[in-house]
Structure formats: structure tokens, C-alpha cells
Length: 100
Image (cartoon, rainbow, N blue to C red; front, top):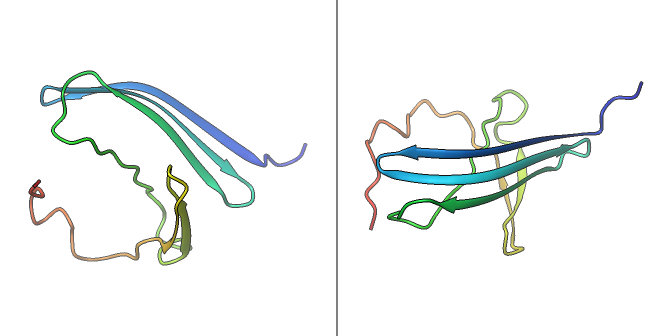
């Protein structure tokens, strides 16, 4: 039996909170060559104050933090960056961010 060369996870959910509700279908695929692909479709079920959403990659520190990563956005632009290094300063200690 050979080792798997890819994996796929799918999730269809409806999330609600603070009088807001959104439904989404997400798919994550990982490949033996190191590529990780994320696709998602979200449909708001209520009005929202902003029209943004994001995807957060939680990664182990050892062997990943500080390493290069290439991000391809939905519009086709490609950004070369790196995974964030560990910081002892919490980004949550400053309270919620103000929205313009």
C-alpha cells in the first residue's frame, strides 16, 4: 500500500452570533508537493457591517515559523511572504480593533 499523496477536508456550516449569520462551504486540499489549497463560498444570511472575510493558517512553530510561503489570491495575484515567527507579545491584549 502506497502513502497518500493528498488529502481533502470539506465543511458546510452556518455560523451565528451577535445578530449576524453566515453560511459557508469550505474545501481544503493538501498535496505531497507542499501545496495547500483553500476554496470557500460564503453567503450572508443577515446584514453585515463589513464585506471582508479571511482565512487563518494555524501552524506548528517548529519547522514552519519563519519559513517562506507563497499566497495566490482569488484575483490571481501572487504574494511571496513567510509564516509568522513566534511573538511573546499578544496581539489580543490591545482590545478590539477600531473599524473606519
